[in-house]
Image 1 (spheres, one colour):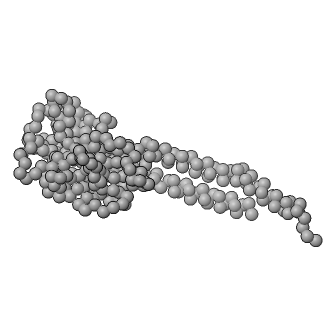
Image 2 (spheres, rainbow, N blue to C red; image 1 turned 90 degrees about the vertical axis):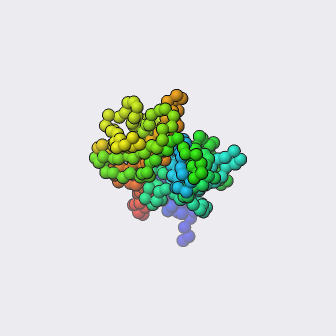
Image 3 (cartoon, one colour; image 1 turned 60 degrees about the vertical axis):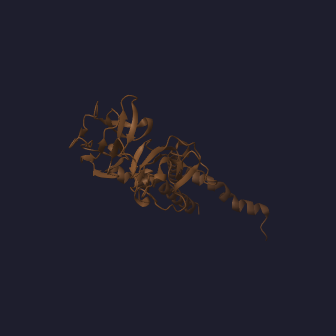
Length: 309
């Protein structure tokens, strides 16, 4: 005898009513789904809305034919590499490097993508600079669709290229170490050589850039008690950081100040201090947490589905 419509409804009713009940009231399923949602929301807190670029204001002096290091660190989400460098002049803006696409002869990323992109470092090298490379450089975010800049240009990093026939500069700051790697508890040596006198004013060390940068050492004033100056010669303004920890990691700048105006006169290109410790192990784990929780959610849903049947 053919089954009636009521028979079909009664046959399928348990499945339509128990599916949400099993997922909602199974303790294992509920906890795993809740954990996924919480961790997903936490990972999204560092979004493009909190995006901020940190780069030294300069000015930086580099000799013609040398390699220029332009530093840039992004605070916020940096997973999609929608970052590029532009050079600003009175006439226009020129794209110097694009981390997403394009080929830029003579310009390379300063870090190996597979090794160090985790710390949102978007620094670049410009090799064999010429006088035409003088100008102000900006590390900026751009829109995916149009490649228009999403933010207004800030102060940027001012660069001056010293030609072979140009008058000798009154001051030159040399930071030869692009990267300094130490282990927790070691002593870090940050080198800085200052050639010439320049205007009256002190040489100072800072960690970071912008208004939030941290004063580390002042050769004519107060400094951190655990930081010492090397002073192997009159031109040596290197410092020692003993017993370093992961909290000491960052980019350090040797800077000349002009006493009369109390303004920054010239800056070194910066030395990045990387401290190997627990943080270096935890960082990739934290960044991979979202993918892990997604996999856990899929497994939980699969387990719940098997229990249903």
